[in-house]
Image 1 (cartoon, rainbow, N blue to C red):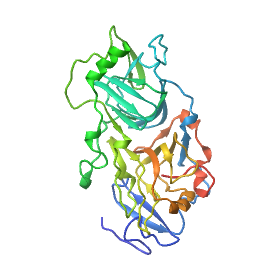
Image 2: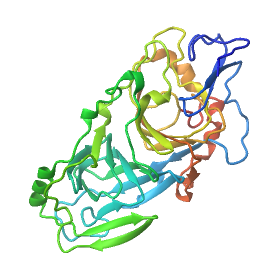
Image 3: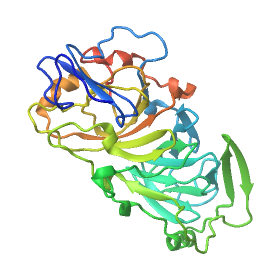
Amino acid sequence: MFQYSQGQHTTQGHKGIPSGCYEEEQGRSGFYGPVSHLIKPAPSTRWVNIEGPLRPHLFDLMRMPQKWGHWQRLLFNADVGLHNYWIHKTPMAPSPPTPTSPLTHAFRNADGDTLYFCHRGAGEILTEYGLLSFRKGSYILVPKCVTHSFDCSSEDCQFFVIESRTGAFRQPDRGMAGRNAFYDPAAFGRPDLEALHAWRASKSIKVLNILVKRDDRLTHFTYADCVYDTLGWKGDFFPVTLHVDDLMPLLSARVHLPPSAHTTFVSQGFVVCTFLPRPLETDADALKVPFYHQNIDYDEVLFYHHGSFFSRDNVHAGMMSFHPAGFPHGPHPQAVQNIASKTHTDEYAVMVDSRQGLQVDSEASKVEVPEYWESWRGPGTHGSGT
């Protein structure tokens, strides 16, 4: 389709917006498809009331009951499930074990690939392929049906869990930016089989049980000897880690890039993006805050991991926002006022964009911030947009 224009408009999106006006981006396929930029006299988030299910949500996951060793479902559809997950610090002595102690059971997800994002804690993850280390800010990608156990070394661990139920996680298409853009595949942490056997010998722990999840039901397998007994392996199917320190965000000194520039993993029906600290755009007429937009084909979820979330007010680490497709959203008014004094962002966040509509689990509803939808009306209220 050819581009056309009428009335006031810019020659470059997110730049040169007429004074006193606001830009709204309307685009298909999650910033990858056809797009238009509308110039409006007021923000498109100026609603005074919202009735019905299509409204923005904010959840304070730090208020959820800590159900140790159990996934706490937050949002879900046929393609993806999002969960909160706490694991106790591994005790110094392996006995006596309790049902929630680590390393008494291994886990195998037969419903799909599992992407753990470590929000708190550090340690190792045992797999049939070897030992992997993780720390705060690590992604841990465990393919479907790979047996694994967590050893939390320094403190209790908290994970934001992204479950891909209909396809495997893969790297994004980097296009003209090149195969090493955003992160070099060499940055993936790979399992170490020798380290696994050395760890087993030093800890004197035998994992004899495997809990297998299929159709969201658990089956318990018990073995006579340790399940981590691999003598060798080869292939291109194995678990990996990736830390946010190894991500190199794409930058533009002149114009704000769309969230799709920060895509980290892709799966069937959804993508995972990572927002990191970066310098702000330097051109005087460049929009420096996330632009008002309708992400028409995708529901948007943002998990706030660490830092100062420059486009929002009264949001802290451990919160999660959810913006269903169908309405425009963008920066909090206070963020627009404060951005002039900033030269860099200082935030770490994980975004999940889902093509299918997401459902809110009843447990997540218990920790929702109900006044979040009002936050675009002015300073001093909760939240903001992506």
